[in-house]
Image (cartoon, rainbow, N blue to C red):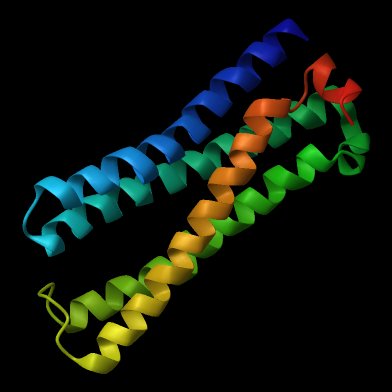
Length: 157
């Protein structure tokens, strides 16, 4: 149990710490110091892609850890479902929303979006992506505060 708890904490630090660091520190800083918004967006997009893949891996690892500790009872714990929702939101963002944003950028050849329809589409997708990210961030913070598999997690239902 001690190793599982230590692994859980490490995985949560990597995933949730990465989400909060990139989303709420690094990305805003990029836009503050890089005058070329397209370049800042490209760099931020790459970072968000990286943390999405890290999140998918970490989420799968957390579910595996929970399954090892609880077996089929894992389905009765809300924390397991929080992880599943976070994975779903991350996958939707990475595999549905981001590719559409990227294709709009490609239509404008990576330059500033000038076509009003494309700009509107891009802004809508960016808003959806941001919303998915914020919800994932808050859910992740919930897991950091409550734990996932530790003895304290079971007693705080």
